[in-house]
Length: 187
Image 1 (cartoon, helix red, strand yellow):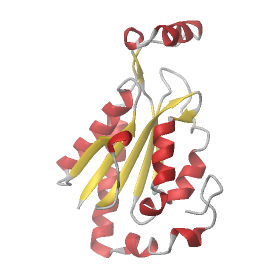
Image 2 (cartoon, rainbow, N blue to C red):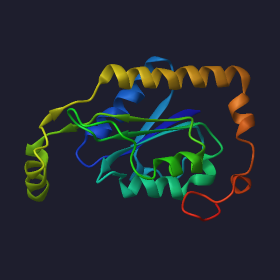
Image 3 (cartoon, rainbow, N blue to C red):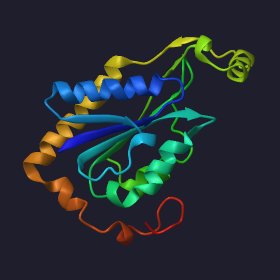
């Protein structure tokens, strides 16, 4: 079965990170399917899922959050990794608001925040004005060594899981048995 790498990206920086993760998985011999979250109708049939989102105003993009909400039951039945993309330059890498609830809702193996990129020329006028007022620096701050190293931890986890089957056994509990989901609804 393939690994699904899916993402929500407004200006392509997060898509680039997702592509980097997918490439590392492919180099390790994994079959990978990569799509924006808006194009994934059902994550069933994938052995694992990696979900990434750009962070705006301290939160994941709505399409990524909605993807987790809509597919929570399915995601709970397989290993899931989450990543966030957003801080630039010397901004601290802080977790976005709500990420702990998302992690818990799908029992994510890990979450990582990566530095992103901002190219002012690609922004809409309103976005350019805001970034200029905030004195946000222009440039690509993605740390490809860090991104590749994180993707390699996914490979190691999946290889170990494939040998033991332990992760699947741990996920056999019904999502409804886990209590309320992150938004207070039962899955």
